[in-house]
Amino acid sequence: MEKMRNAWLVLEDGTAFRGRAIGADGETFGEVVFNTSMTGYQEVLTDPSYKGQLVCMTYPHIGNYGVNDEDVESHKPWVDGFIVRELSPIASNFRSQTALGAYLTQHGLVALDGLDTRALTLTLRREGSMKGGISTTEQDPQALLSRVRESPAIVGTDFVKAVTCQKPFEWPQEPDIRPRKYHVVVVDYGVKYGILRQLAELGCYVNVVPAFLPADEILAMKPDGVVLSNGPADPAAVTYGIETIRGLIGQVPILGICLGHQLLGLAFGGTTYKLKFGHHGGNHPVKDLDTGKVEITTQNHGFAVDLGSIPDRRVELTHVNLNDQAVEGMRHKDLPIFSLQYHPEASPGPHDARHLFRRFLDEISGD
Image (cartoon, rainbow, N blue to C red; front, side, top):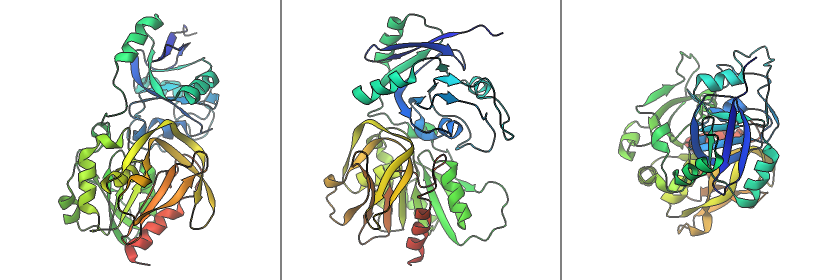
């Protein structure tokens, strides 16, 4: 039997949790957030939007269906640390290819279980998300605390440079004989495969381009529409992305998703602000103000758009979060541009909002 390896999670306010190491040995730092999804831990691990964060899963039993090569949202895990109440010792699913613990170790992810994740979540809800550190090598929480406090803050840090592709590529990457009606360029701020899959399934020929590609080079590709993808951390730090979007506004139909939505708000001259503990999970209710319908959505973001700060009064609210009234969607009254703070592709989560990809194609076709 493998000997238990102790691990510590320490928050910047000095709160410490002792647990068991379940991944790679080492030390890692980031913003500690909680995710309320009951399933989908593999999609969470591989979502580039989690770069710079230590993710606590609120559902207590994680890993029971293992890991496979299909349910990934990028080519590698991006979370900087993983926290669960109990790692399942058994992976029981016909699609499973490896156990979660082995996957964490294989990819060098520092993780722990055996701590009170309910107490951790209540602390973050009460005090707000904060910096933290996980260590399997430091057994003195006070010594770890000093390094936590010295670690970079999420505000003002550009993590997009770490997750964006370095050169353009096409999607799907495998041969596909389905007819393609529209050419869509996706600006990769940390794009999830789920977004690319949805566009391809709807008949789009997709080019994915780096976040630093200027507007004139994107427009030279003659896209029918542009998607501004999700991504990590503070949108205000991605100044080159804001500048590119300003060059695209009025030139081509645009759909912004998550970070792309926030960058669009900044490009329109508005501001963003830090949420107390963010929205992370697959069960967030959002109201569509046009239809009055409520959709249960997948979300992963720590910042929000202040719609009132946008000087262009033609930008209007379309969706609102029913938990805290945060802006969840906006559109331009005269231009074919709209954006969503949440993830219409889900992955993981309910599929209530996938119809919004078709709305984007309607904007392209002029219907």
